[in-house]
Length: 139
Image 1 (cartoon, rainbow, N blue to C red):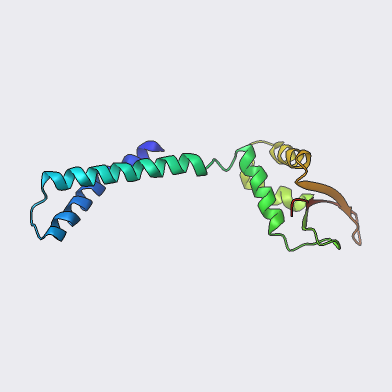
Image 2 (image 1 turned 180 degrees about the vertical axis):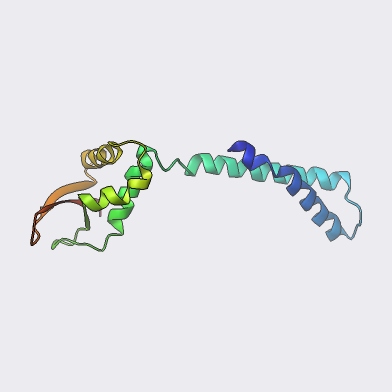
């Protein structure tokens, strides 16, 4: 990832130096233009790399799955009579399929969120078979 981020530093350096030279009215890119442009391009790439490491994560990690489940519950249109948002366990499993690395990932994420008391469990009676639901507790 770092290599991909820093791969275009040379190109950005030439571009920035050309812009500065043109802005000065010069047809020649000089050494100070290149030094300034290189420093700016390197700093930009370093800031981008640090930001990616800090804020991005692999979507198949446990933490990412927990956050995705919470996001799904927060945006759910389904509500219980008390106003809390919920999703059926079946819907959560279906929506999380692309985030799973192995079979027990969703269960582990649900267990952790339950232990953190961010979600709760209930059963919804329907016309047919009752279904297990997961409801959001943190709002």
